[in-house]
Image 1 (tube, one colour):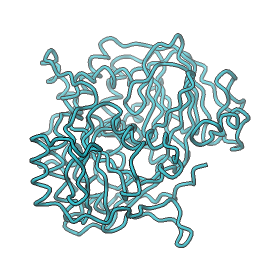
Image 2 (image 1 turned 45 degrees about the horizontal axis):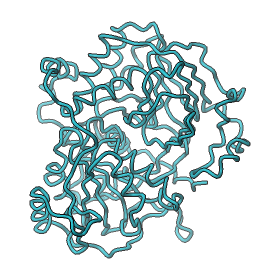
Image 3 (image 1 turned 180 degrees about the vertical axis):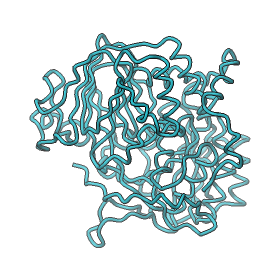
Length: 481
């Protein structure tokens, strides 16, 4: 297993946060989702950046990448190679990418510390070449660029879409696929997450599910690249969200309100610190702890009584996307078999699909959510700053539930509704800022494929997990409704 050479000498997250606080006054703001210098697509050469504009000029960085890719890149596969489908009538569910395979890499050049392109060339490209994975690289230029690209991309040219960035660009890609006219087919295209952002929660979760130890930075990137080389696919839940404004959003990771959302959004100006930005943001927010008023209700896993679509859900069939059978109109009370939280003062509410909230935030140690379920956490008002700090420090190793904090509540749920009072507080959906308004959501079980299980790469590429950890078996995804 990939580990730091001297783990006992590594500073803790809190220590790194205090060090960062000493120079918080420096200008670390990073604008937007990242400018890049795309180049013209050349189907005959793999590994070079491309854009839809064939007359686009090569930047100096792209020329360097092109030269390296020409020397090191693998041979291209035939355009139109079919990717894995959710079901195969002849042979049953499939769970592997083909060999050889061809992928489109969407890389955010300014994600995290702004070193994604260099990391790709140093850590990812050599492993892909060895594993016979040919690729074409696209640099995103701005926020929502990846969303726009996948809305019109010819998906049949690729066996998988690879996102090298943080969780926000994966959010863009999934929502872009769900906004296509052929969304039912588009969402079946396998996806892969290569961590190059600040939080990298989705990549950390996939690393955990594969049975590997919790690692960060280049170690996590290498592990996730090896998962891509292994070609194994696993089905993933998808969270379907409905906002009071009529907006529909799909989440691949989480919805946060209150403390966690504040830290996530307010620490954006420190993004060049990488993962340390969240530790620093936590310290700053603890100094002026807020509480938020609202109403929370949820459908526990054990209380699901019917999956027949409600009349409201049927009336919304003209909207694109699957029908959410457990939800009722936001103007109506939640169904009687739902649980309504009596308290209305909160420090935070978190709906989480996966094990990690960041590469060093093991938020859900209770295990992988079952198909169609998610983790719901909330912290009631009254918790002390000291206890809240203790919870977040313990979360690095997944031991926060052992603190026995009476203000922390956890329950596995299928659906939820959150109604902020007076629109106060911020929503963060997969780390992206959303308007604070009444929202409800339902988990779509096993709705899309991601590269995540340990496959069969060459022995020299395979990291060794601890003997006690085993790969979790996951049932094949459901057909979109």
